[in-house]
Length: 201
Image (cartoon, rainbow, N blue to C red; front, top):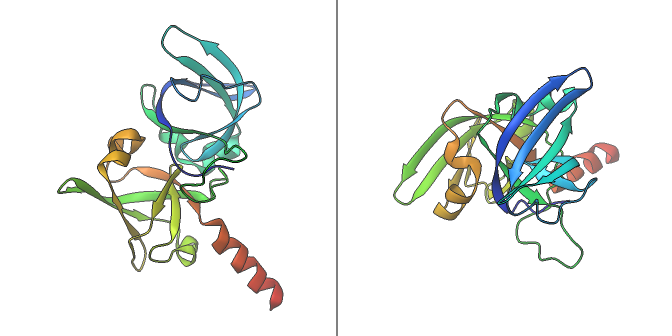
């Protein structure tokens, strides 16, 4: 379980394919300090398991194995070496919950259709798959690339968010452009409500 409050933007060192699968290597200065083999870390919103950790003079290399399903369902296919990914360690008992409950189970991808500066802030518009629109409400929560964000407006086939300078600078959002894909995790509470209503029918 995560909060969607990003701790750092890690740097992609390599993405390699082999007969055994896909290996993602990310450089980390914060999350890698106390990471152990088997730990869960949110990588741009996707809960991944640390399979190897190597220490360097000023950073750590965290290695993750990706399933083909993860590769297809997420925006990882557009990652490039040198690019940034959002990192967050799993929520510890007794820690403050400053964002919202984020599981790290990506529901699918959304496309950035608007991304522009407005004064000191940024206006972001994302078009999700049509079936995801039912989970969106104004002032509700959504995770974009693992970032806990508040929905500002729900349109017919998209939704708008406002990004403050702190979030823009700390996360990988400053590398995004119109037309890019982002990972989406819809609010867990909305999915539970939908399921309970379906069962009651």
